[in-house]
Length: 292
Ligand SMILES: NC(=O)c1ccc[n+]([C@@H]2O[C@H](COP(=O)([O-])OP(=O)(O)OC[C@H]3O[C@@H](n4cnc5c(N)ncnc54)[C@H](OP(=O)(O)O)[C@@H]3O)[C@@H](O)[C@H]2O)c1
Image 1 (cartoon, rainbow, N blue to C red):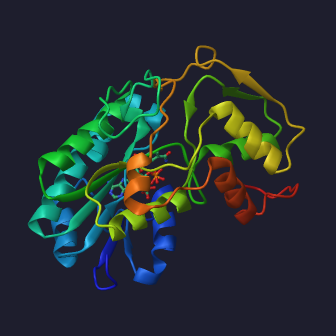
Image 2: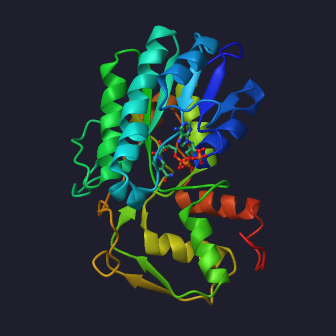
């Protein structure tokens, strides 16, 4: 990526898109969302790619409400499966690199070691299935593409698990969090920096990119509340069975980032250091009554 390559971020106001806009700010990225570019509309996608001939297009859009996908299959398919294929086709036709974001939820979470890029997917939910179909659509266009799978993202814009936990703690709501699902919490700014490193290293193909380490949702919530000054707010650890949700989640979807580390020489900081940095930036490191 040179300073002359135009960079386009689709879904620029989302959790990851907004972090990408910030991290890539010195490269003057263009950020688009709806209604400027609806990625499910071929006319708008083609018009947009014409303007970004030879550039780097990062697709940070998605139907990301995991439980919501179960009752909105058609919309999830359009955005998570069909749109990526359309973007990959347009990228090929206009000589652009498509960088596409995917998820640990394409795996079933039954492997006894961290998932590598070439491990067999077996999604358990509509979200996971539609995201996997999106990856396959990107690959089948055989253009210039890079797929980056990440997981359990927290950041500064939009909805995320940490923000939800702090809000519930502030409202002194009864907190119950599952303690038998393990994954890799990841900071949106760290993904954005890692993704930039991959692009600069001319990476192509599929990569896993998460903060180092692994934990459960319960431990993540406990750490966040302790760091943010809500040590006295109790959280009850529960099992997946006790906390029924519409979408089935993998029990252990830890991602192996060896391929990323080998190519870039970078090891992302641990998830708890990243969490501390995120909370510090939000002003939560001291006890506060600030609203989320
Ligand atoms: N968050 C995670 O934990 C996580 C984990 C792994 C992978 N990912 C993947 O990373 C990507 C970004 O996730 P995120 O959490 O940043 O998502 P997000 O916060 O939900 O943001 C998605 C963005 O896409 C926009 N968008 C929705 N429909 C669109 C359309 N038809 N055309 C153009 N833009 C549209 C949204 O705008 P509106 O807000 O106006 O709808 C929003 O700005 C997704 O592909 C997701 O699957 C996320």
